[in-house]
Amino acid sequence: MQDTFKSAALQKEFADKGYVIIPGLIDAGDISNLLMTFQKFEKDISEPFHTSHFSKDMAYKTNVHNTIIEIVYPKVAAYLKSYVPAFGNFMIKKPTKDNFLQMHADWVYVDESKYKSVSVWVPFVDTNPENGCLGVIEYSHKFMNSIRGPGIQQNYFKRDKIWVRKYGKLLSVKAGDAVVYDHGLLHFSPPNMSGHTRPALNLSLVPEGAEMIHYCIPEGAKDIEKYHVPDNDFFLDYDNWQRPRKGKMTEVLPGNTVKFIDGQMEAYGKNYQSLMQRMMGNIKTVFDKAEK
Image 1 (cartoon, rainbow, N blue to C red):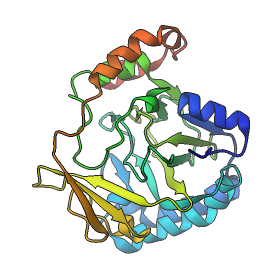
Image 2 (image 1 turned 180 degrees about the horizontal axis):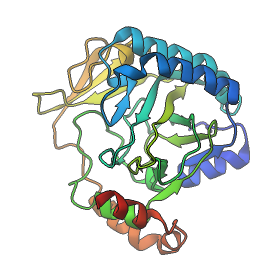
Image 3 (image 1 turned 120 degrees about the horizontal axis):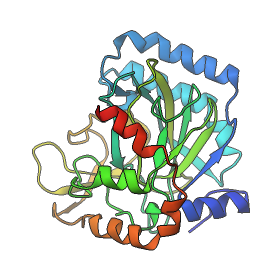
Image 4 (image 1 turned 90 degrees about the horizontal axis):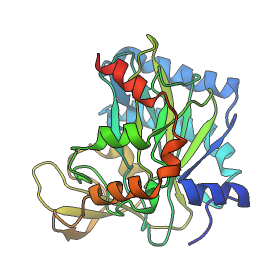
């Protein structure tokens, strides 16, 4: 499997923890241009947590995708070994205690036995536990399932908030900083209780030359469907939870193929006692405040 980063130090940190932080990836001018795109559509955003990828407005999704690639991709590409964009989208958190983003890993985009795909998460404002910064479960990419996508459950949803409290690490990064993480890394985000909207972007990248794939259980289906993804239009056209309109179905798997990660998470707790001791002490406080 090829390295993700050109820098040996960044590659070692990424392979170990599942993510790295690149300070100041984009500058104030870039953020201003991205905010201009966001503000064109802000009046139409009503949900507590909004991602442009789930919008049914094709013009909006395409505009966001193209703007992110134009501004962000050349800068992050300088750090990576031959990666190309899959798609870019906005990740917007309105100020409300009701938008805790549950622990999850992102979709699969490539055969993860051969390649690593990544996300680049960049906030447009300084982030902290009060306004919904990104949180991660370090090292979790090492045991995450390699079949992930819409409708494919990964755990029993009984202990995920407990795991977040015990093992989660909150990343209070500045506007323009980038968190580059393995798509298999478990991550989450606390509620935005700051009183102000927290805009951010996410750009998914895949190794150049790797076949893009997609797994899902479409609404009303029981089995896992695997698709060949021909190009970026697959994701722009995709209506989340529905059967993809583009791409070719290449395999059907039983719905119970994926084994839940609850056992791995319990083992994680036993194996990383020293890691837990280094976790940020304010995680429990943040979630306690949100639940009052």
